[in-house]
Image 1 (spheres, rainbow, N blue to C red):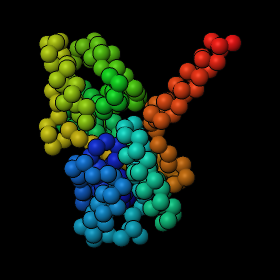
Image 2 (image 1 turned 90 degrees about the vertical axis):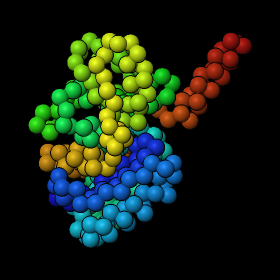
Image 3 (image 1 turned 180 degrees about the vertical axis):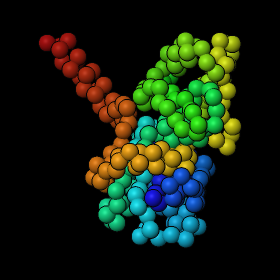
Length: 243
């Protein structure tokens, strides 16, 4: 099964083409350019590099979150457009599971972390056996302090991966209570190949959906919505106080 996979959940972005678990071509950038300007050229590049056309693709996978609201929207919208135009099935992939696939050759607890701002993290925990992932927790929004307490309570060595890995390492290592290391520089950022491995697993289990069904999974409301609700709550409180 040939899958075109898009990863745009963080500052970096990447695209790859895989055939089952074999990586045919991948393009990655972490230079700060907006994903709306980079995804389509990267798609063209990997398709040309693998000497394939869209007629050869069996499914389109996209990371649906959690992560950057704008990045996720761009990636999902791009995948939906391609899949709808070619009548291809889609696969929605967790950014955290995709990041965990980068580092499956470890006996440590795999701890993907993405900076969610406001002292919070997007996180999930995994273990690996024989190169396969086993999920320990759902994708979640968690504070740094709560994650640290949980990892200490587990009493096992931890491998951090994701765009929040170095930040968490710097905070966690100082206490001396955790055996924790960040992933190597070349594996620390989410990449399309990791997401493609998760997409392949999901496809084998029959988790194929239509382009219309491919939707973002943010875990929390976008900032604009939160700010609007806060303004409305403040106005309600002001009116009630006046009455």
